Image (cartoon, rainbow, N blue to C red):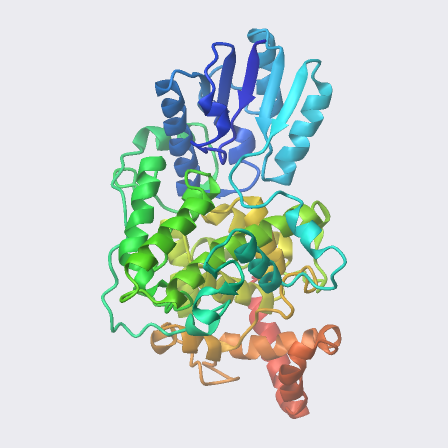
Length: 510
């Protein structure tokens, strides 16, 4: 039976059981398509990275004797649409069976379900064999529970998969979570090891994208592309992280500095999200390095790293599949404003936003606190419509695929889901940014000034947000302290805050 197997751009799993089979009757199909480049405006490095990785994966399959059909963007036969391409290939090669791996994005899952109902041949879907959990695992775990607390899920995952556990009963080190040890400010006391970067030439791929007229954002150096293009590169990056960056990852995972784009972060998220690396092997590599180097690597470093992968990554995927498609429309705070134009240019005098957006445009990367407490915090304080910030995050970051981007954006960052993920909104005044970063010292605005000329906009925007959303949050116990402080402010001060905040918000739409 002649079989066509689809491989999506984020399904580059070398260890999938499909590839242990040898058959002359199986065709593998991978395609660069306008359908995927155009559903949002992507960073140019993101499109290049995916196309490079897809092409290398196709080469790897061919080296193992597999029959591969690879449609480049400029291929004449490329219909630029997934369903149209598959129907064309079924007719061209007299395909009798169509197989695919379950997509991780709802829109593709829906598209393939519709397609398979239309096809008059046998169709079969397979697991991607990548995640620790199934799509339904989180829903099953929380069934009957009142809250979806990530910490409970994380502990369950630690026990189930015997990760950092003593006899599968107690956590190694005596604590489940070392988050309190992961909040140090970066003071430049240590030398930050260089990141594992690659000097790849990607001019041909870039030309193909530009000749097709694909709209993109951001910058790229086609002679020195620094992201991994295959599994070998990804494994090299993993080993570099474990050896050089893991020893201080936990300490400074929340820290921010204008001169340090990555600090001790791994930059492995792209390789993970397109499945060049598995979460299990990444966790195993980190634990192996920790066990060999416990004199120089404390448990708080490795636990903080594992929590991001075993905890948040699997948790966010579970939330996504539990709540879609309705989750994509969540906007409980009824925010309506547009994102400022300078989110695409970094043309702002707020130092923290300037550096975070500039780095994002230059590298298609920012670490999780920059995303949450700088760009996300500001977008929420100015009451941006979640669709606006959702599209920006999905496009600008190299690791942004919807299943992980959307819950992090709408849920954790923008509180659009009403507290399903975050029990309180992640908003702050300039004080938090000053505490965790080195942005404020060189900023035009005074972080210690609450209102008036030269005051840090985060200060008056924060209090204005609490005033605007007071009725919504007044029953939230985690917001009680902030609202009590607001209540103590004189009426005249609150009126001044409101006027300045709204004038500032209006100025950004002009």
